[in-house]
Amino acid sequence: MNASSRPLVVLTGASTGLGLAIARRLAATPCRVVLTARADSFGRFARWGFQESETLKLRRLDVTVAAERDALIQEADSSWGGVDALINNAGVAFRTVVEHWDTTAWQEIMEVNVRAPMELIRLALPGMRARRSGRILNVSSVGGMMAMPTMSLYSAAKFALEGATEALWYEVRPWNLQVTLIEPGFIRSDSFRGTRFTARSFHSAMAADDPYHEHYHQMADFIERMMAQAWSTPERIARCVERTLRRRNPPLRVYATPDAHCFALLRRLLPRGLYHAILYRALPHVRSWGKTDPDGPEPQEDATRERR
Image (cartoon, rainbow, N blue to C red; front, side, top):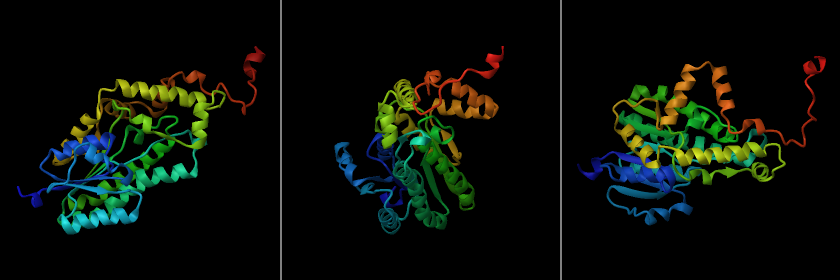
């Protein structure tokens, strides 16, 4: 197969974590691959042994910058025959309860996790429609179908991405375009260390007398423990992505880890009230949450108990 006739796959956020695992997997396929990363992490490609060739291109891309998004897709259309598969993997995560959201974090996570992938899709769609062929994979998360305390901002963005992607699935089927959400759960990696905080959530996590301190403390330990014990690795998710690219008719949602399958099954089978009650009781040391609240009212005896 001539290089120019091979499918062109574009991957965002390819220099670290899950993106790096996917990049390595794609580089071993017969496809032409474009790996992208921000300028401040672009040097990692050389460190990991990636070098440009006839079938591998490396491009700087800040997914939040419209001019850089435009330039990437224009180059793909004019020089490489257009994007055959777009994998939106770039993302950020914040650890914060709703009360500790701030405008900066809200804008950043929505720009990176929602607007950027949908803008890249919007730019790639005309060429895909003209060829009546194309694949779009958006890397989501179990956090896009169920929410966890202290990860509300992350889930808000992933829920939004999933809603937009589901609508897209219906919209582009007349042109034979394939749209898929990749939904991993816990992955055995240290990626949780890159989760960001807002100013207020960081203070709360550090201050033992803060009302939400136990939320952050218990959930941080829980997430670290679950990721250390997870069966799935970034390499396993990368294999799942590659298999999805090769499937003739991939589903809208691909549950990429065993726990993702489990949570999806629970959501389908259990009454919603019972589902949430079970998950609440399963939260780590949840009885200790909210015990320290200098701003809250003094505890009162139950009135019914007083009457007995």
